[in-house]
Length: 220
Length: 406
Image 1 (cartoon, rainbow over the protein chains, first blue to last red):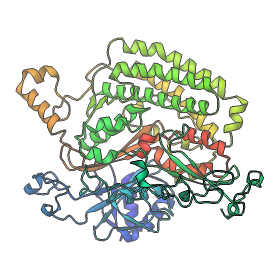
Image 2 (image 1 turned 180 degrees about the horizontal axis):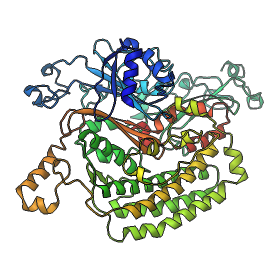
Image 3 (image 1 turned 180 degrees about the vertical axis):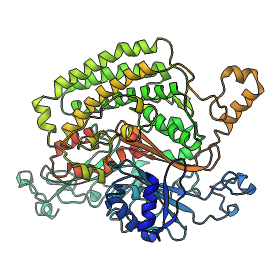
Image 4 (image 1 turned 90 degrees about the vertical axis):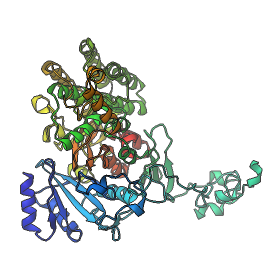
């Protein structure tokens, strides 16, 4: 069933398909980035494919993928810490982004995969096709730093805005510490009507509640 | 905001007219009704919700990163903590993924045990959800009934695995140990009580005027739109879309078991509640059939590359010691590949996208938590409703902080 999906895609979008590396019954199509939106729209809207459910977008960083088992040669089996970049051979294309699609009516599955070079990590967004792509793309951006061009609100989703680096990249050490975030002032908060510190209309940062007016020595 | 400035130091400010500009309210992250730690930034016009932005990540523990640095077996405790009200289902989804990568066939008895424990977990998950809806709409009795039923089942789970919540009981290739003697009798004894309590909840809530008024027609979403938002599980079936992974892609032994998939029609909070109630009864049917059909036999594969050898062999043979040592120190050697494995979790499709590079640790693993897309669609559900409607809607989608925020 899924094979016919790939055949269909070969007919309609012959230029878009790079390869079809299926594994263990999962059907996978590697597509070209330029045609991703076209292919996605076709897969969702054509009644023969009907892949209306975008189950997940997942990312993979291939930096340390090479082992003897994956054809990386004998050298690859020597354990080199992931963050020791000098001793690591660069892998290109380094990133993969996988779109796990499904159909609730036809009950078939397909995975689209994109391959990305680390110097050009841009993907056109599919938020216009599946609304659920919004959060998944934010998640991939948050974890891998892939930029989704045209995304309405591409901000971090799990991490906080001041977080440095992208945690699921293989060169991000597990035990890496993050710098402390200075306490934020909250100038946009304005006191409502009524008695209280500073009186009505005064920004909270100018009252004794706000941080700016606090004498740092007062805590000694 | 500027209206306030005009009333600066006005002693009559308290009696002045209420501002007509939209107000921003933070609901959560630490709020008793925000299960887990989710923050909702609401923009209100009076009491009507104009805009809602859910913010997650307060509970993020780096599931993927931790898993990539643990052996395949060590990931199991992390999966428990994704959804701590139905941990068996998470265990099963993960080990199914690893087994798919290896191409491993699990003994029949283990498959039945997985279905059995998975359905118990589904019941506990639904009971938690229903109890919370009742509690937060003022029906405290419902909550107590639900918790009594849930505790009965969690006691059985504890007798099985030694832990009430974080069970870590599944293994790649089967499960950790066999069902202890006398356990099935205990389960059979407590199941009627669970059903009885479910019926009590049914009687208390389903035709309760207050409850129906608070939930019917609230948080409505259509089937096509729900799929577009990535909804699965009870939230999708409440819209009338017949999609259950157990029926659509039968895994384990679900193809041998006779059960029905209840469907809703309106896609509102009430339907989501009734659907969960009905699913509890269906899960009970599945459990009974499992108990009838379960064959005797091994509960884990007899392949020392993937499953720990029996202790007798570890202590008396060099092969046993070596297999044990290699499995513990190096982990299971999973052939390279990339798969997406999924099963029907209590709240929808629970999937794991796993990549292996042939080593003892997962190369990359990312979870498709059913609550993640559902929470992203929450603004769509609550927009236009009143502040008080957030709570039942939020309860009915049964978002679990652990899995959404990983």
